Image (cartoon, rainbow, N blue to C red; front, side):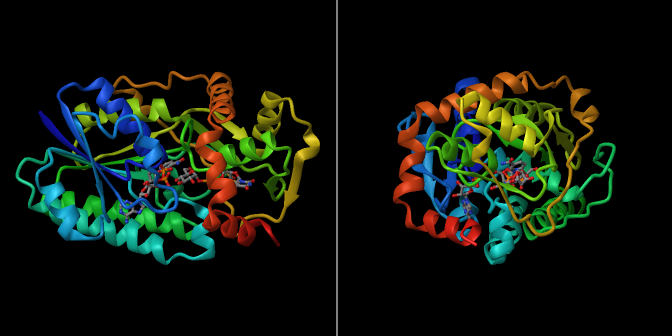
Length: 335
Ligand code: NAD
Ligand code: DAU
């Protein structure tokens, strides 16, 4: 059996990855390590908690007494755990430095001692390139992160690389574009707008709404990670982009159209400070290994909207009963 450690496996992408890993790899034994912060949820793994090849460990990656032994016995580590929301990093950045940078450092130190480790996948992000006015970011481009979240991820990205260059920890680094799909916490734009619109509440569009994101379905992301675990080259960086550049205002209209809701729900609100205008990835390096995105955006968005419509059990308690979510919403949008 291949011992696979997934950090942050109770979050959005991590939980989708755990599901796909268990289904696609009968020879993998998967351990999820997750602190269950506000966005890490046992519900995301409810149907695999008792799976014979899955173990859930509740703990902090930054606590070496918990994360160290798990890394040391792994053959593959897929490191998703992070603070991930840009707006929260603007309100308060401390946890981003602690988890994204220092937490990654603790895992990498343990990786130096791991005798069987053959892959440490550092999940980075396209935000490390900063705003891209034209063209597409290549893996060799300069990193110019512009918000505290992006900077903390850039720190972890380069720290992971240094452990390859210096200590030969078998690191690969992935930089994905904006993911969408089931189980995404309803603070991110798609689930926030879908769930607000379902309730006939305003959808708060930042600035002029003309910022561009490149949308990647989470299933396509998981397939890319699968391929890279097999065929990636240690020490290399791989962009993972969906090739679906959409302006926020167009995305908002599409979401409202899927739900049959009026455009009058769009509420222009003040812009995010330092709001990156556009992200765009050159994915030639990954495509040369045989990957391409399979989920057309039109279908992926429709299915995602439908998932939130059918799974109110999942998001309604967060939005209606979770005091921490309500106070975040007030701090972010109450102005
Ligand atoms: P998420 O916020 O949904 O989940 C993060 C998970 O990490 C949660 O389960 C949380 O409990 C866990 N976690 C946080 N701090 C922890 C700690 N100290 N110890 C253990 N667990 C901890 O995030 P996501 O959107 O699924 O993103 C996963 C990874 O992918 C992140 O590294 C993120 O930077 C990266 N990424 C995300 C996107 C995207 O569009 N969502 C795109 C590119 C890269
Ligand atoms: O690009 C990859 C990144 O994508 C990941 O690294 C991050 O973890 C992930 O959160 C995401 O970052 P973004 O800031 O792009 O995602 P978010 O969903 O927060 O915002 C997407 C766009 O929508 C962005 O241009 C801001 C805008 N937006 C967002 C919110 C929450 C709004 O207009 N209104 C909102 O209320």
